[in-house]
Image 1 (tube, helix red, strand yellow):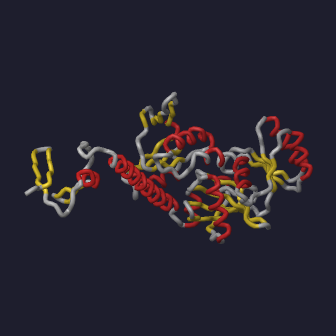
Image 2: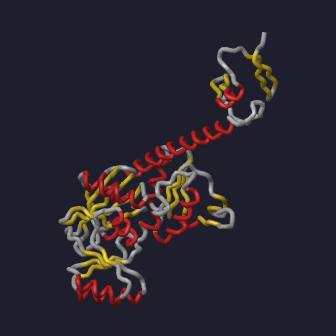
Image 3: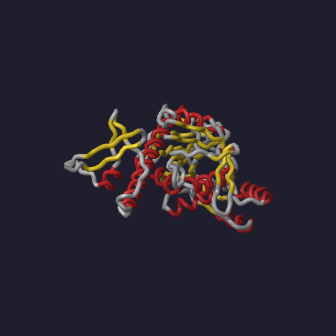
Length: 358
């Protein structure tokens, strides 16, 4: 089995590659910066460092929102034949906070009340109706970047003026009081394999490890796990981090991270998350490969049923020590039976079998 991790070369990606080498025969680490896709009228070609990319049984694609388009294109082009845990739609949805909120809404997943205004005037009207404090943020960004905290209408109005000058869309969201904490649930397939609670430092509202937050392991209840897994499925991401706020109304999903770091959660929980990912990738890849082989064999068999019996065939043989087992295709077409005797004629690179007649 051959696999590849496509990423920017982060430490988390390197950990994942190392863990995957325990399961896969070959694991390549591909830097997304050197991947290019050439489009033409008939066929698109994926190149890595100027050469056609190899064929893999599994490709785990990671990367920031800046590379969302090429990651989505890569997944669309090889996702039908190669197992990929992140669906192509995830690179559009998860990398855009507004689209994430829309997808959560569509799937009836609890989230903070969120507003999107088309003009500055409409946004100011929204601000006048809200209870404070609130959060204002850009649709794209990671590790808490682009997230602004407004304690009052006056501060929110000032932020609005600054944001409008940047001519970028932004989101207005209710502030869920959690004491400066949030939860990162790490989802792999149908399971939350690890979770930890992050607490912002005294000078911060963002509970991100990269923003100086501290973390500790936490055991989630079944309902919170269900919400995290449901959110991952809604995004078409089998491997992701789901950020959850535990407010007075219960857990609400803040966002989904399809390229989550492993350092913080591994250190806090003591769980080898990279190994959990690697084993899951191997199991899913093996399952897809087996299904593809069965489908291919069934297709060949169905085709052979329509072939004349004197048709020549090219196929492989199965060795058992010094013996050779004939493929099922051969025995079926030749109508070989175990209650008959056969005459073998053998020469170098040639074997013929004829039913023995007395």
